Image 1 (spheres, rainbow, N blue to C red):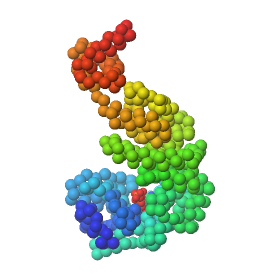
Image 2: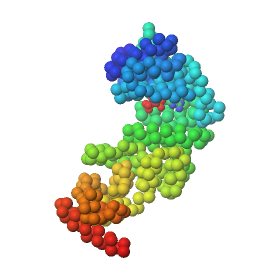
Image 3: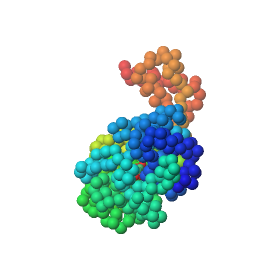
Image 4: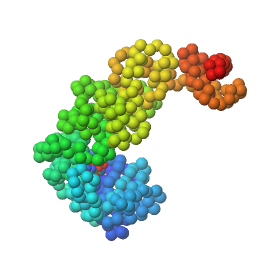
Length: 426
Ligand code: ATP
């Protein structure tokens, strides 16, 4: 494996060599493990590195942080530490053994050696290591024939209790199978179905399930993954009433297509969370209150909840864009929405006029800016209060509908709006 390590970015190579020296000085052994080994063997790009230390991972990282003059984060309870160098994240963990007191429970963890650490892993292709130790640097350690499974394209668990110990591996198995277009090794496939039949996922802590579903939806083109989950397990682990129909899958394909179109057409748009668009699609048929509850139960972040719930709650209102000609109304409907929600609607509604209005919003309306500022309003002896916001809002809509260009014109509209609003108030 030395030749593969030599192809890593030079900064990473430097860190691995320094880590090797630091570990030797501290009398520890040190290994690259898991997905990074798999990806190196597959000649895929690797950005994040997992390192296991037989001994004290945090002590090794302390030495590296000093050499490379970077900060590091650590988690004493787990004996883990992370440094980020040259954009690469390198996670160090103290080798550990895991014990599950009941299926789906969070594992109890004890320090151990590399063999124990590899034993606790999910699939043979993820259970390989590369030694970074002096005299042994670059040797592949493959206790479960992971390399052979990698060549055969097989997802294989390490022991028959694997899925019941940790049912999140059901979702992980689907993720790796679809990502690499692999197959389940036959026993693994049977045990996976058995675990599904015993509703193993219902025993898992909701935060862990959330993390796995997010990872799946973050894969490039998640349509295939969603389809496979529906075929095998369904989405009852999110909510028992989620039932995806063939039309939903056509919609997921459209989302994939529109995301590509949009990224090409509107390079400046910041659509960071494609996965939320798919998640909104998966939950769309649930009532709003249920969606809110699922989002809260699975502890999705506030911003994520807002995007998903806004999609559900605005679904009907956005339909107005099919007939809408008034520019300020197009603006009013779309402005409060995230780009993720806008792409959702673009993929959801086939109506030409609606899509034209969305294009117009993104190409033009979104860039409308007022020339008049707060200080200009003060100069007109308008006192800063709630009325400021109301004036700016009305002025913006006027500007959009009537095409007001100069600051002078804007100011004359301000005076008119202000008079009207103050009369209304009195
Ligand atoms: P990716 O390429 O998606 O990052 P990865 O294999 O690196 O995939 P991670 O979730 O980062 O996956 O986990 C790193 C390694 O930790 C895995 O390769 C596997 O060895 C181990 N691992 C992660 N989750 C589990 C689990 N639930 N059960 C057993 N081993 C796991």
